[in-house]
Length: 396
Image (cartoon, rainbow, N blue to C red):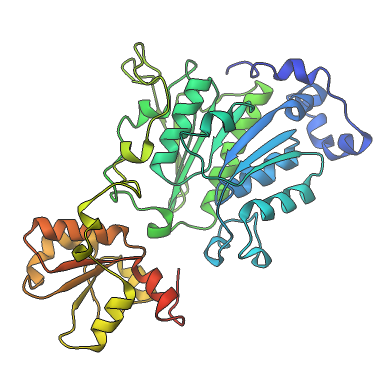
């Protein structure tokens, strides 16, 4: 275990507690591993949470309750009904509100002694170093690869520990990346997966309880780093399977050839992480930006009313298809499409859709490469259809 993080012990020596704080933290104060000295470290520490969603909810709740002196929250989203199954920092009454407003109210209600910094912005290469700079620890509660690489790289360049967690369906992972004490995220995942290969939680789903388990583990690791006690997850990847209720561990070693934290690093500044992960920027010209490769939900609706009608191909998963579907659509999941192109008529106009238009864009590329010319991607997917055409359609 590394010692308590630099600067915390010095700041802690000047900390005092009110009578109310002593009562609040009494169960910590009677623990030899914490005591007055440790609780002062917690009060003097600062943590930046990237995301106030599934992982950010238990992180924020328990870190505030534990007495972390300063919490920064970065999020630019609003509360949606689909969040409530797992994002316990927000309630039904908060739907439609910015997550930071909801989070701040609930965290202050839990512990008014905690100082909250709210950053209602999208973290990017342009602002990451400035956002992370003032904090002792950064905790990654995001669900996409560009941001994970961004957070990792900024933490390494700033010399800050990155408390990592990820969740998907029934599976979760957690670790602490903190060179030179251990590896970084790039040592574990040198290259991101191809775009669309790993579904997001919005596409693949997540057990609502799972982020509670992983988020609490992340919070525990952060507290241990501050106290300078216990065995950290630095150099270890903890893998949790909720279905089997098993925890297993994988050792992670620093890669001496890592371009970020290796012996001869080549990454000296933050890069374009969407480009690194193969995700086109909104300004980047792609073949799918050509008008004859895309169709709006309004135009599709008009075509369905006429004749001949297009063939509507749904590339979502069967469980999504059960929730809602477009009229007369045919389901072929994206993972099965390469083996089932023979079921499609290349002479018929084919409209491909998914939930938001991302998976279907990959399906259109696949079909184009297979020789299909009359194929288009439905912009915005079935979400856009529900918003613009059929307000009674269930959304998820």
